[in-house]
Image 1 (cartoon, rainbow, N blue to C red):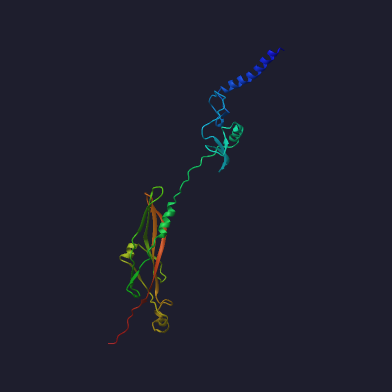
Image 2: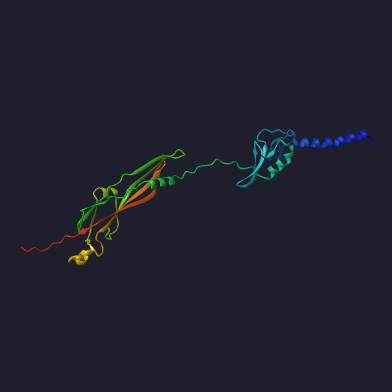
Length: 274
């Protein structure tokens, strides 16, 4: 074969594969292709050029890191990382993007505001007044009513603006007054308005006596077997509640108690000679 003919055949063998490649690249392609930023899959457009762009704009560095799901990659405008402008990194960039997922963008930190916990801290920080009970008469008489009164404390209130802009209101108030008369009768719950106004009434059946009186006095049989005074326990039930613009939510209750030791005597008649 003449030399010129061999040369022409060699040229045709080189041109034909290139032409075939260019024709295939010009068709719509649904797979993975190399782009200036790396490997792009599920491409649905038309490739019009096979030119390799060697100077992409920022970001240009492919960085591999680890997030909550494992190794992943992301683009960075500054090193370290694989510089996509360097052709020597092309295959490694393609491999990295094909074998690792893109990193999920970090979400900005969120602040969780536990409104109930904040309200509880405020409620517990207050000095909740204990009752100041008073009994009339100062010494009780068996089978006659003794009257207990205790001042009703004013509600406590607090208002503050939370970091998210909501207004938090916290309130504490006495919702009940409990009275244990100390003689074994059931504890009685009084509305605070009743206890502070008309008072709570109770009649004792047995008088209290000192140890010496129970030992020596002729009337010792009428004495309580152990008590020299009845321990009257009065409890304020403080209820806390809060709201942030809506209806009130009850937090719970905290009791505050006071004890008064109450002496009870008796009145009895004696025959009188004319």
